[in-house]
Image (spheres, helix red, strand yellow):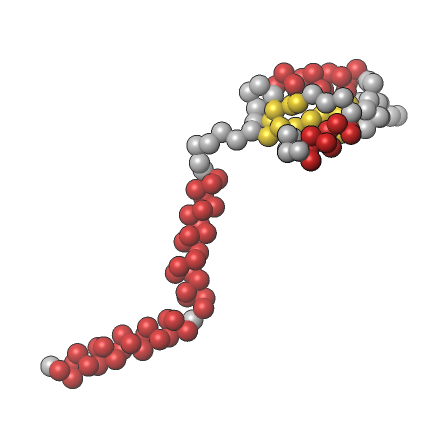
Length: 115
């Protein structure tokens, strides 16, 4: 019976050595579940995240004005919160101070029908 247990412990020790030497097995056993947990935990968390966005309107067309107006009205229910800025320089300054998360710049020909 003693030989039986010596054989079992020998096999267990050999498998442990093989496991510790296998970097891929160690990764998928210890690191991957942690990464998986962090990624899906952050994706499916109940935190309501919103992003502050500035729209810089360089166009004077009615379509561009309507676009900005509708974006501001819809931002109350959206994850994108539209913030008022006068020009691109002010938007960049607010972006540097982390008051904004992004800038949408409408070009001067935005809404112009070309044909």
